[in-house]
Structures are given as structure tokens and as C-alpha cells.
Image 1 (tube, rainbow, N blue to C red):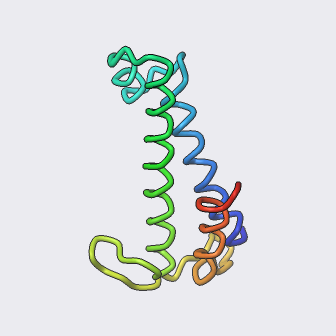
Image 2: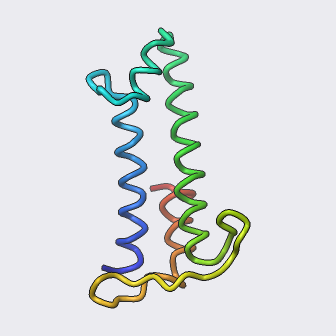
Length: 105
């Protein structure tokens, strides 16, 4: 796995959470809570933006924390991440994370 593939997998997870929580057919607890609010279409669009922005912040912060660019729980250090084949993943995460989570992807 490359560092880009690693970051892209996080991005896909973010998108999957968003899709699951906003799907009308979802049985996820978060979806049921949203549904219980009886939101209008306009409010649903705002909820989508809130969730998307929140997930982006969370996943982006975790990735930057793993790369040593920001603290995780008040501790800032570079973690030595490798896939099971020994491919180095840390050290280049920040650029790909920016591209996928803050860029135009």
C-alpha cells in the first residue's frame, strides 16, 4: 500500500459514513436520530454539510496526528506507520491528506 492509498482509504471511509448516515434506508443509530428530527429538505442539506465538515475535520486531524503534524490527545509525535508488507506510510501523509480532505477531491 502506498501513502496515497492509505489516505484515500480514510477519505473513502469518511464518504461511506456520510452516505450511511444520510441514506433514507439506513438503520444506523445516527440516521435514526437524524430522522427523528423531522427536518425539512433545507435542514437536511444543512445537516449534510454539518456531518461532512465534522467528518472532514476528524479524519484530517487523525491523519495529521499520525504524521506528527498535530497533536493527538495533547501528544505530538511522528508515528512509524507501515503496512503489513513493511511499506512506510508515515512522513508523507500530510500532503495527501490535504489533497483529499481540503482540496477539490
